[in-house]
Amino acid sequence: MHYRQIWEQANNKTIPDGYEIHHIDGNRSNNDPSNLMCVSIEDHLQIHLKQEDWGAVQAILARKNTDKTLISFAASKAQTKRWKEGTHNWQIHESKRKARAKETLDKRIKETGNAFSGIKDRSANAKNARLKMSRDMELKLQSQMVDKVRGTKWWTNTITGISVRSIECPGEQWKRGMKK
Image 1: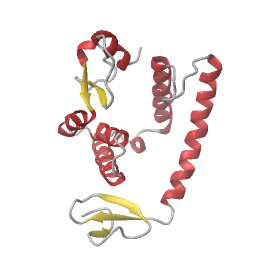
Image 2: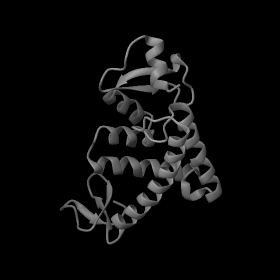
Image 3: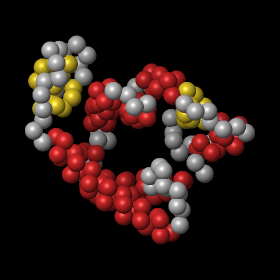
Image 4: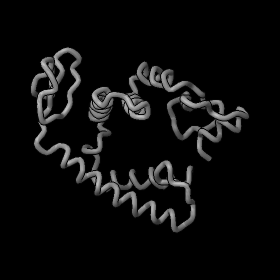
């Protein structure tokens, strides 16, 4: 059962609009009702900012449709943290990365019946179609990313230190390169 459903059943109410479920101990596999807390998206963001959980910050900012520069900043922080921990995708052998991705996808399908949110059909044929779609989507996203990066340069804001990719300089407070 999905953790949102577990919280709703345990508390006998629905999650209000603009609210999310936070795993108190940080373990998304621990869906015990005592580990689940309903918080506003703003409070959820503040919790993960204080914990410096940049991956979660990035995901929350994306759900809030925040300025892409802030999302990019959080993503950069998340990747730097993973690199220092030795858990960045590029530090893990390809076979282990693929196994981990398959494990994550299988777990998501088992818990929610969906490989991607928004897909409702839970039949066996739909699962096979979702798996095929996920592979097709992965290839499509990879080619789109190559197109987005081609011809761009890194620019860093001299005040905030945020780095972004762009064809042209974003403004006066930006200099070329990834470092301040």
